[in-house]
Image (cartoon, rainbow, N blue to C red; front, top):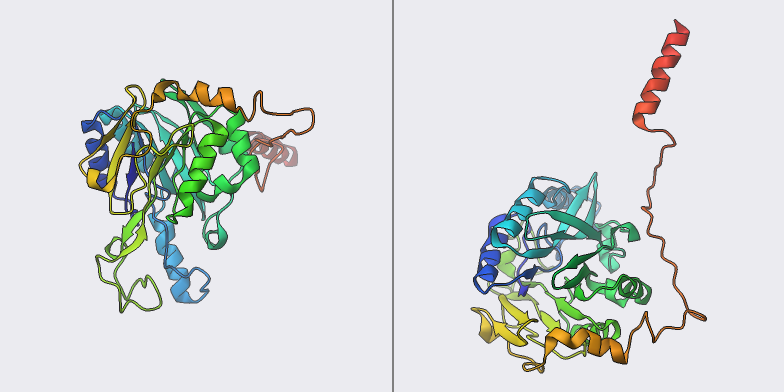
Length: 341
């Protein structure tokens, strides 16, 4: 199940729980929320502005991010347990004074599984988000397939996609902020290339989802913008391993839609008018991954490791490392003090 949803510019877990409850009502086992769903995508903020106003804007955005681990993570984990779902959600994480666009993973027992930090923030995102590394590119075994996530324009990074295929990803979650009509073509290509299911929830936002003016101006002028004006149109979609559209894309409003991979039928939620059935309504989806891999296995029989190969540095890339542990340093300092005496 994926959602077309507005973002939360300040953490309001109540909205997340409301939609998880709705998903559980249709017996969903996996729920995926959009990029920066918690913490918010700061569309409209001018972080290139180094004036006191611009710095104050970043201070507010920094305050709306979450800590990992932290109370917000605990709350999300408890929701996953309460509604018995795997939960994959976009968040903005605060690590010291740097923010990271991140995806968090939870299992139905309420365990926080881990995170993926966006490797390459896109364009102006580099003003306010830091860079991830390949130490946080997990793929998790689940009863429904190997689960992982690649965020937004990371999907244009061919080598990163290949690294995820190398980990055997089967349920490829793509939280994004890209609502252009070209995005569906990108997702269809990824599904075909990887022989995997692609679930891409995309932000749908109205002006009222952002702070009001004059504190926050969505654009230089808001003369033609009302609280109900659509400022980000969504387009969430689920794609089969053969590149066929299951439900979506949805450009009409917030909504949920599900693909039942075991019974090969597409179910629509309460907002089904926003989520039309796609091309693959009667497709036998349970066995589609082996069928797709039979035709094209990008890291298997269709690879040529004798001429083309990829080496991934999956070690944490830390700006500061210490050769001794803090406790060792403390012991050495105490010994020096004794010598002085």
